[in-house]
Image 1: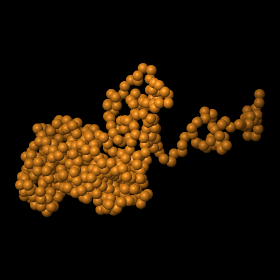
Image 2 (image 1 turned 90 degrees about the vertical axis):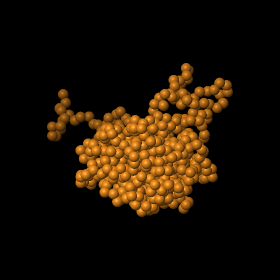
Image 3 (image 1 turned 180 degrees about the vertical axis):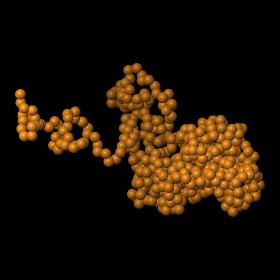
Image 4 (image 1 turned 30 degrees about the horizontal axis):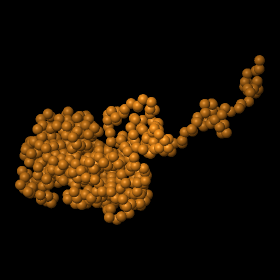
Length: 508
């Protein structure tokens, strides 16, 4: 099937042909006809299969066929995206597909001055691509009106409707007309996201070209078991191979992304970090440097990586395994796009083994292990650890799992098994769960405590003394004790009975 066989306007077909589009992808073949007919739609497809064109083409088709009169068109189509990079990418796609149509499109997002965006809004537009935060700000200022909205698109629905964005999305939905067409597109759609989508969509057409748990077949996956402290050394070792031309590295935290990029630069490997704390200009510069191969490695968090569309990305490295298995599918989908081959590498320490099991359960097959490398895992193996368990469970699940201690058992203490005292001991967590035999769970708790302290401590402050004396300290200037006082009360001479200048009181 070709694009000419689909119900697409001739001017749009002309733009697609000039762009090099010949045959639609499976998601495009199934989504364009019902979306062009005005049906609500829930689309699920692997990353890199053309989801943007699957909703952009029918939107252009409908708006062009029903263009209202007037020089200043109202906003008739709104596309909500989680990140600035993805918003820019979608805006570029609309500009390419609709280059011969008299439709206006604008992109607004936070992190930059809103003055240029205000000018675009005053001129009027048919299509608005926006991030929820900046859109709500402009709605509150009276600069954006959605009364005439006809089509609403939530792209990357698994993130947009997740807990971090649901409140912003609801605020936007409250400003839209009740009668409208709603399209949801996403790389992954877990069951809880599907439940939320059912409340937003009216008799939707569901399009899923592949199962939710499937991964791109062209991607070569592998896992390295390595101690957490050696992950950066292993990454530097792998990057010595020139075959890794462009590498996207995923970390769990923003602080971790900065640290990995900094260590790679010290090792002579060009790297930049991209995450939500970076300014928009810094994020765009890092992304452009990576696309033009000025930078070899881009270190990113999951949210910031949304919208990164780079041709021929050779490798994706999961420096930290994600807490949600579906996120792994989206991460490795950054490579192997449009049928090209790609490689996905995962680092797994002892505390992430259960996360790896969840991923393998989702994708339906084990991830091959690479055993021959200079930094093998040396930490002892055990059962479920408190740290891994806290990564996998929600707060409500943690509360339910806590059981009262058994009678006569003291929490957090080692309990001797009946019999010989030299036998192996069972270590229980404060919740009363077994964490394995011969494996001290307190070490994991200490490590987590040290990490939290590292992330919240301001560097450069002098350390506080271990003991603070309760004795008064004499100061020769504000905030500084007298030299040699040592924190003890300084001896003073008895008061003078009188003298020059009338100092002191006469003795009685």
